Image 1 (cartoon, rainbow, N blue to C red):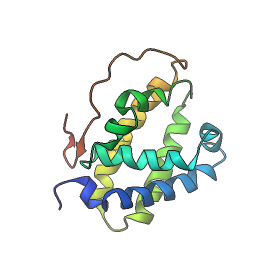
Image 2 (cartoon, rainbow, N blue to C red):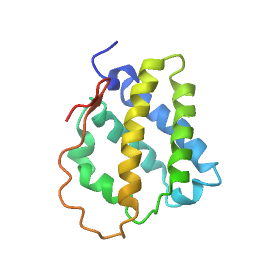
Image 3 (cartoon, rainbow, N blue to C red):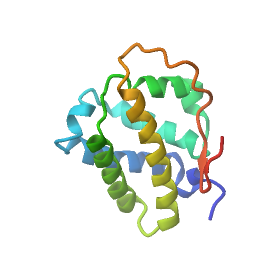
Length: 149
């Protein structure tokens, strides 16, 4: 096992492949496609850059894309339901199995992060756009043992 999830997913290229496989599923899904109505190809890359930072790679999301605060604000007003969240997790599971087959420990660690992160996204999604969420702190870091900080 490598030292970081970032290395084990294949770095930024691996995360871009995972994001592409996931968003192909999301945009074809009748439940989730409306939630992603404002989706752009740039979003896919931003997600990969976010995950790179979270999983132990370069801190480029914080340095160039607004950091943790921006990520949280992107979910405001989406009104994510339990059904949305579960479908999101199911589609991510499928994408992980496609892009990173036969890697159960890696898949489990990634899905633990996505379970944790989607709960936060769902929570803030019920606040209206423009809500002051306060200072969320630095971008979280996630490894095989869970939240590192």
